[in-house]
Image (cartoon, rainbow, N blue to C red; front, top):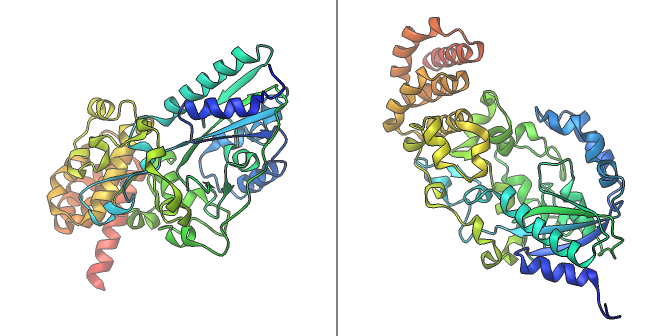
Length: 384
């Protein structure tokens, strides 16, 4: 190695060659406040039923808690900047809106592949180093570490914002025993802007820089397993997997270039604007086939049916009624319950007919509660 050689510069150059839009370095102890902020968030119950976050909070709080030997963290961002307006489908009630990051290949696979390639490259050049790679599924607080490394800053919507890539970055981390020269931390550049907070359909931000996941459409349509609370259903609109609203309105996105996006995240034709009528006819086998290789596959067919039924109920499209009625006989209670709500919204007369035949025989508590609540709502509307 010559005196001019910089392993840090070489790592960053290789990362870009592997398809990462940004690569920066932080000390392992560079985000000392993250653990306390996480504890406050968990104590407030803002994580909903994401119990895995609480169960491994002791490891999530700092890299050293997860791996005591770590000295440096290489943070990487891969762009998925869309070539179109992510909010454009809001005015098309007959289709389901899927969050931009999930319209192509599964980011877990794509980012991890890049991280492993970079890790192999690094070990080949510094054989005595030890390292570990992480993408989302491990108890690692990627956003505070990315801010500490200087990739960007956590905006008021709690997501990372980059001066160069806007809000469209998927993060990964390589922890290593190497003592690497850290980069300067990111500087918050939101100023007085609160566009992301105002854009949230469900008021999921009780304050700037704080998210209540229990009100977040991404959480409700992806992580939440049971019936979606009634208070949020209308606001969900035609979103069937995730929500991009707070990301899409960020002014820093004007610097994001879709040409920087990894091609693996380009929207598949069948996921760009899927017809609700088609989605409502999916059985488990067809669901797995259509969403193979997509992060959507992990929520399973029943949650997707629940989401599609909420979107159907919001659509005002009478042509969806036969598909909704068919799902009143679904084997999954969460699907049957969502079908009841959708039918009551789309065709009150048909709902009354079906309620007379079906309500008394529904034994599952949540699904039965849907019949009873919809019945009470219908009566109240008649009397008003």
